[in-house]
Image 1: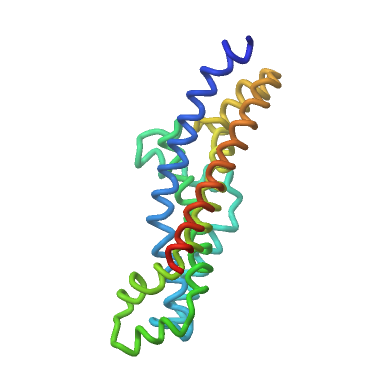
Image 2: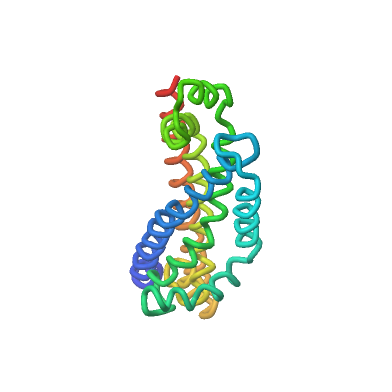
Length: 221
C-alpha cells in the first residue's frame, strides 16, 4: 500500500522526466555526433576525403570531451544551459549537458560502424564518379545501418544512465527521485522501485534496438 499510494505517483512523473531527457538528448547528440563520426571516417588517411590534419584535430577534440567525468562536464556546461534555456535546474536544462556529453561517445560509435563498410563498395562508387556526399549517404550509411542502430542503442542506454547522474544536481527524473526520496530519506522501497524501472527501461531499449537491427539485416540480405 505504501508503494501504491506514495511512490507510484512520484515514479510516474520521474519516468516521464527521464524519458523526455533521454529522447531530447539523443536527438541533439545525434545532430552533433553523426557529423563528427562521419568526419572522423572520411577525413582519415586514405579515405574519400583524406585530410589527416583535420582528422587529428577532430579526434583530439572528441577525446578531450570523452575524458571528462560526466558529473564534472555537467558543472562546466551549466552556464551554457542557463544561457540557452534560462535555468540550470530541471529536465530541459539537463538536455544541454546530456547531449554535449554524449555526442563524442556517439561519434566514436558511428565512426566504428562506418569503418565496417567494405572498401570495395566505396571504391566501386568512386569508380563511377560518385561524389563524397553521395558515397556517404548512398553507400556508407545504408551499408552500416544495422551496426549504426546497435551503436545508437548503446548510446541511448548510456544517456539513460547519465540522466541518473544529472538527477544529483537538480535535473529531475529517476536519478533525482532515488537520491532525494530514496537515499536521503532512507526509503529503500523508492530506491528499489527506481532501480527496477531503470532496468526495465534499459531492457526495452536494448530489445528494440536489436529488433530493428535484425530486421534491417534480414531486409538487406
